[in-house]
Length: 620
Image 1: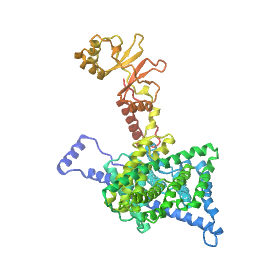
Image 2 (image 1 turned 60 degrees about the vertical axis):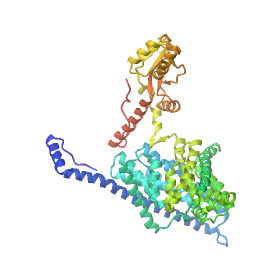
Image 3 (image 1 turned 45 degrees about the vertical axis):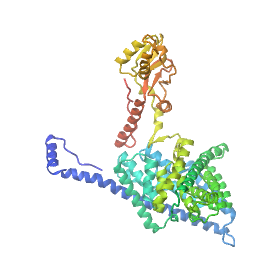
Image 4 (image 1 turned 60 degrees about the horizontal axis):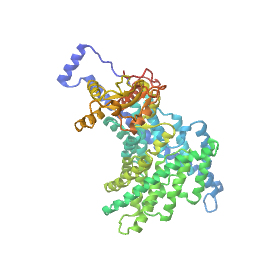
């Protein structure tokens, strides 16, 4: 978008100032302000509408694939109308056999959930998404879900919406920040259209994808999510995804049951993630061709599906049975285990699909189990199993995504009942805490970390690996010799701007560190005759010193600062580990990282493919 050129002459500035003083903003300023406000909103509406249509198309495509498989299966159907057992068993494997070569040779990003790919695009590529990957992922996920793979459609829909936003911003030639927001708007609209829940879509993006947002950007996200929801409701005629029972908590003591269930959901979230990310290593040890692994995983899913067909596919029908208290305890118990296994084999073998829907399924099943056990062990409870299933859905989603606010708002928008908020909070927060304490990362973050990408607050912290300590350390250091008395050290420190001294021996090698904090403690003890002004520095210094080398990365420094309660690190020469050549402060590390992020934004706003050039700053 081309902005009108503004004159910088003094006469023009005076005129503008007079107009602003007399009648507020000038006509040109008002026009520019209206454009700056309306253009992003109109773009958000466009992206939201297209993302909503994308969600509708994806759902339609899944049903078309199901009809196609049923039509093919009718060639061998039995007299009772049911498809033969071997067809139902081999169908997920056949889908893996078809999609496996595409994943292996054409679009390896197609495998797994689509949310990590969007996170990576936002953090590392300024919102640029390969549309070929989105196209393959849409078809592959629809095929896998129709074949019975235990994957969800939410992750791919996020990628579809994000791809639409990326495409729109490329057509309009937006800069990096607007491009990232357009991608976020598409993702929010996709999730909102899936569940017909605009707040869920907005919070999903804020809590998982962006993690940092401004008020102006929030309005764009909300408008895109609302637009996507309206489009999906118009196309699906307002049909609800789940049949939610009217919720009413009878007694405050029942919160203890929800708390215990939340802890259980946290443990199940860890088990699910361990299978999803542990099975790929098992498949690697088998030395099977990469393109055949999805077929092997599909075969295992088909075998489980022979006895427990409820664990195949999205499982929304079974979730609705749990939400209406129509699911037997024995079946629900088995489905908890089988769904975890089928999801592990589906995603662990490289199939394309999300983990949001399997998390909802497992949460509903564990809620049914926990509700039945609670009624047996505590007959005084008034909660039905449907209530536990509803709360369990939110608790398990919280554990896998580490996004409790999104999970809470998802269930709330499904019920529109304020009474569900408190039980959800009691169950979701413990689930998140269990995963954070035992593992520390969500399923999406773990996916990226396994690929060597560590994203914190929407930025890739791995860029610290390419930043050497030598370029950012302070080369001016203050030293004292070991035999320098305390009185002289105090005078030298009072005259210096440095809060710490490096203690060296006669050869110039470091033997310890003496800080201003240490000196203050010693001086406070002087009246007690603990030390004297003649005490040498070698008796006062800290001998155990944590150091860095010149060629260490800033990531190493970041880990040391995070692990130890220190504000600076001495830097030693590579060839002389006891010779100090500088020091690195924690504040310098943060400033250097912020500079790299700012440089990315400035350069990317002028050219999409502009590399980061120039010499890094170095403190003198």
